[in-house]
Length: 177
Image (tube, rainbow, N blue to C red; front, side, top):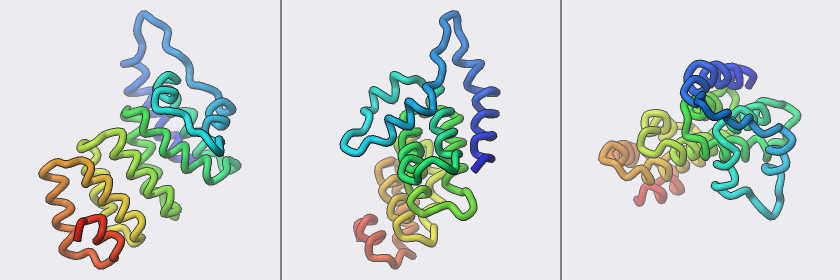
């Protein structure tokens, strides 16, 4: 997991920070405590607008929470989902690394590929397509739903190819079979 944060921080420093720098001072990332409180709610969840107002540096805080082994599992899952509000190169690197991390839990893999689709739309097809063949049906079903939402000819072709080999009833239902 620590590799994920190293990749994101390096990407942020090399790509995002120089592009964000301007005559205006940029807002700093919110604290881990602030974001932890936002992700820990039981009855409420922050709106997309609330996340966006915090700014793209928030992805660094989300990565830090995800990467901290003392962070509760449900908060780590929510951090992965919340990253979708920041369609930046750092976010893409983070979500791809989370999805392919060795020994990663299926629920987090699914959340990462869904977040990729939400953040990047059809531009995430190459990142999500491999999960159509994931061994866990819930991950495949998440990949199917994410790719179907893209609505492009390439996305439809990927789903048609999967339809020819898919055997799980839940995934077949998501494929419309």
